[in-house]
Length: 615
Image 1 (cartoon, rainbow, N blue to C red):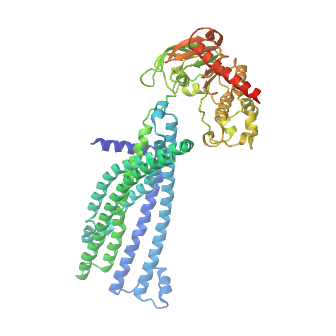
Image 2: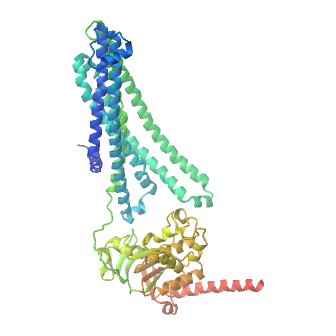
């Protein structure tokens, strides 16, 4: 057994597991379709019987109820030909109507099953993506993930709603029709089946080819989706740097690649359909010629020939359509495989300890080393923050400040050293519990396309309006919100695009404060606010000092000078530690920063006073 066959079976098992609860609906759909075909296949037999009876000149012997039908068509006299034609026409209408009713039931059952399965599969995929670790999302392509959640799901839905039932339809037709054909005439039955193996072989051959081509089509579509997603997300950057033409050319290149792969797929299907049309029409022509000869020598009746031609049209075109069925099956297998790739990725473990009590906020790093890759970001880092204290982290970019915050949130796990929250080793705590105890405000905060109040309540849905108002006041954003046309009910747009950078940061800060966690992390979260606003925010945070442990990552000394402890980092190591007073008196990096930023502040103040004097 080849590896490809094994992989296809694994994909089939993945889909099969998600059909639980809907298999009965599929069974009812197939049963309804089988009953429908029994009635549908009765119509040609009725027509064949009538044709042969008319040609033989038989007198019409009406069954109960059929005499009224005959009289309706022929008046008081009931000639045999008209009576048989009336019987055939009326019987065909009734049988087709009954079959149509069962086909409607088939459609209802199959829609219920296919939509339910795809909804379940989509929910599972999104849930899985939400619980994948940061290491996965660091390298994942957003456009590709969108493609798997949308286009690939639609491919599977089309397969379940159309192709599964089409495969069943083809087999049912053969099962129902073959006994009828052989009962009518064995010679014609064998003749009508001569080209079916050829059609099936061609369909299987094209199925294998289509799978390979569709993989490239799907990949090309994912790359196209990525370009669109990135461009729309960064549309302001595109305009700011006048890169419209470059982006249009990039999109056109991906679009051309997608078109070329699609053309290959369509061309292959064109070859298959052209070939299968010739085979199918040739099969019907063969039946007509040979059957006509047998009618002429009297070994076959006209009615039987009519029935065979009708049945041949009923079964050969669905068999011919198996090429399209197998094509979509190949697409579905590729799409299921793409989903399986994501679902096979290990999610973050949620089985660790989740204490019932609230953390006090004590943090201890002991000889912690960490690296995303080589080189290390943190080297044997050790420090302690007591509950209610404020710790400030300073250092150049890449010194490890944000990494400390990410380790505390368990976005990444350390492997060397120890990090303890209160009396718990961090790696033994449930991630959801840890994140419920910590709030973080990032330098570039993310806001949902929602109202301001909706964004503020993300971390605490049961917050009262008074609590929301107080958090907004502490973050110095309340006055700005009140000036909006609809206040807290104002929409902020996608990613908070309708707000300034400082407003977004302060709303994110208010969101974190409203959560009221035992640990608050500000990762350069005041970089977009002015000095006066920063001073007010820090004053509000100072009033909370004994209620929560605060870690501030910053570059401005004005942000960190009131912290209880200050760590100066460089290349993942602590090169200075203390508070503002002690560090400013010791020669070193912190003292130089004080001198540089102090000189800049003095120069700014001097320039302002000169302008005022000049005015």
